[in-house]
Every structure is written in C-alpha cells, then in structure tokens.
Amino acid sequence: MVTSHKATGKITQVLGAVIDVHFPSEHLPCIGSALKVTNPFINNKPNNLTLEVAQHLGDDIVRTIAMDTCDGLTRGQEVIDTGGEIMMPVGEG
Image (cartoon, rainbow, N blue to C red; front, side, top):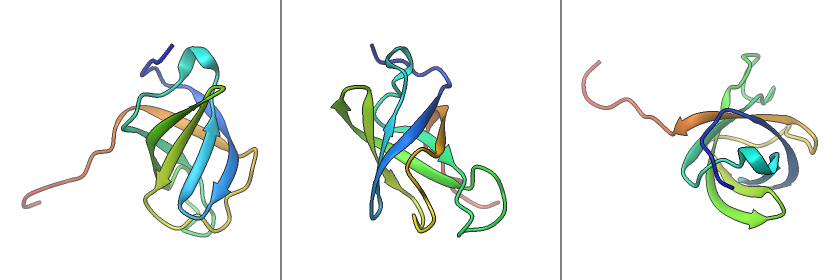
C-alpha cells in the first residue's frame, strides 16, 4: 500500500548518490516524494539533505536520489517522509 503520510524509515544501503530506505509497509512514500535526512558532512542543521523517491524496490524499500553529498550517511540512519514532493523556489525572490 502506497501512501503520502509522514513516516520515518531507515537507510539500508548507500551507493554514491543512490540511497535505499526501508519504511513500514503502511507508510511507503510515493514515487517523487521528498524525504529528509541529517548529513553532518553538509552542516550542523537537522534534516539538511533531501532525497527524492525514484523507485519502489519491494520488501518496503524505496530507492532514492540524493540532492547533495552523501558522505557521512550510514545504514540505520533515520529518514523522514515529508509527505510532499520536492519543492524548488522559482522566479524573483
């Protein structure tokens, strides 16, 4: 069952910019969803790295693409489903 509810998962594998994350089956994020994880190699702010869900692999695991460096990420690290898609500011601001 695929939902867009906010939930937490755990990193199961880090392959460069590709991160696999396990979620509870009742809270599997949709493809295109934005996930957040804390990466101390970027800065000291919590949830400073965005991951985009690219694929459902089965066994309640999603494959994601990181939007910044993955150095410092480890298996078992908590990932938060934002419940929405990646947002980017456009226009003058």
